[in-house]
Image (spheres, helix red, strand yellow):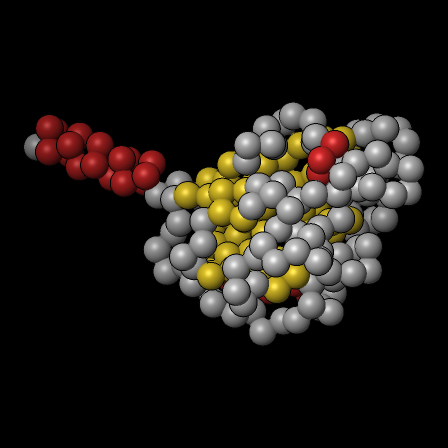
Length: 180
């Protein structure tokens, strides 16, 4: 009986290990520094303002779409700073190329929507914290239980965040820092 129980636990732990939802990036390292490619190119910041390449795996069963966000919880606003919100990414997608957040580029999958950031426009806006302590930048991929959030490109970030969290089956993040 003991051997059967141990075998069953090993099988279950293997199944759970294989179903872990993860996100990776060739340019972002958990706990590392945000590369200048992903830093804003204005307001005194010397970056290139290019969204990073992101890939994800271990998609939970029942996933009908994905969303990607970039968020600075340390911004001195009292509510953080949304740098990127893209949703309605088709379920068969498992990567976004570098630069997909560019408003003028056509690198997002068909049907994906980029909505307003705290810069006041859709698309990726890189890091540009005030001088002082480095800020954290959290890049998150959400696996969603709906194929379409029913939101548009002029939707406010808090509304998008509410809908993402209400429809999330799982989420995976990479957190990096940047300061000046």
